[in-house]
Length: 230
Image (cartoon, rainbow, N blue to C red; front, side, top):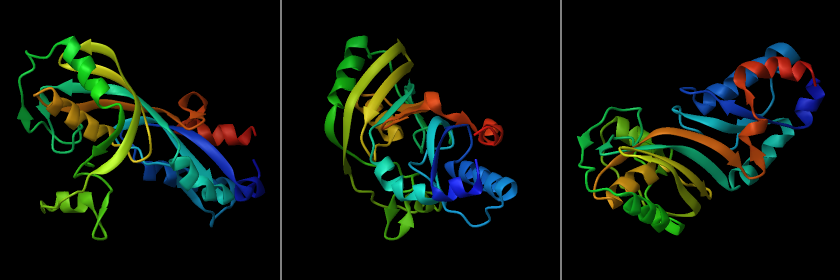
């Protein structure tokens, strides 16, 4: 790749590593662009944040390709992962410890499949308190970290597929295809509540955004060498 090619616009699908923030991935690529290609001032951003404990497809837009970010973010998304039933956490995943436990003995496979199907279609979802949703100009997680009470309004989202691919209570593996603005962590919370129990997200991997697949994404530590070969 030449500096001019990056400036004209380049899209790089990345397979985001576990524990990395989306911001860290952008910063790593910005460092490579600056040090390897002399691009000290170049636009770079991602099309759709992934939580630190999630892995998978993160679309990075460079140069003039950053104009496509909004359109890419609107694309249909596909996720796979695991819910743990019978326990909740404040952030609905494993970033914080379990804060309550619930019974799971009453949960049957029939119940699990029926509840999963009840989420398919256009539904209302309340985003997590620990999220980047803006409320009165501040991010929701800012309120949460300061133990400030705040009301987060429900938003309409669309789930087109919700399949259970493995059932081994308390663990349930899933595949979800959904539209823009969907929080899988919130689905975990609501899924547990619908089962008269609790649940949190144990693992999450984004496998697709629109026409981009994680199969074509590069691990972050392979980008530098890959770009040299283009």
